[in-house]
Length: 107
Length: 116
Image (cartoon, rainbow over all chains, first blue to last red; front, side):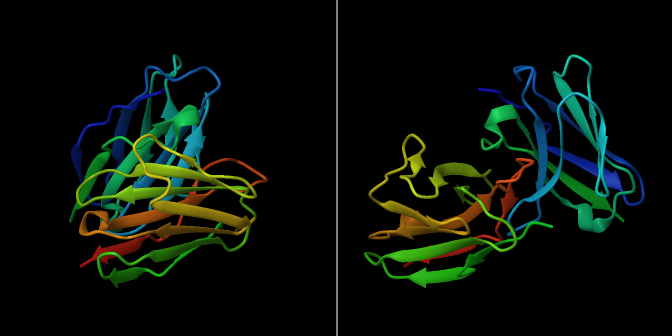
């Protein structure tokens, strides 16, 4: 099973970019990386996913290393509403969530 | 965007009773839905995969006779917690994937179950 490793917590100043890393060194070549976030006491929210190329949508950017062993989720201009737990999941095991990164955006 | 609803959003029941939680995909069809459980300050734990028209697939350690799953249509899956006990108190979350792809999950808002 593909497993992921994320730092337990991070702080980011409001308006600055938040860069959240994820290690998924066991991911297989055809497996996607998915990112979700969960605001307290709510269901998780899909953010973005990618396979090999970097991806961008209205919420975030996803940078995947060439060897695909790690990725970084970028929130370009963090707001207080981005305070949440962010999960990356690997490949076919996008249903197995690790402990995630608790991001706190500071005013 | 894809929307998944859950009902009820919270429920309190007495020990020994059963509780049914509904999960609906509102604007897409979902052959496959998923049920998770989340305890306070912990991550989501996958309980089972719900397949329309067939039996659910349960994760190791999840009692299928206690957590009954029915996926009777392409937009509705239900989870019934039978003979609930206080240790079943948790936050139950469903998710669904659009049959048309791509295959990210869309989550419901969750159901807070408290068993007294």
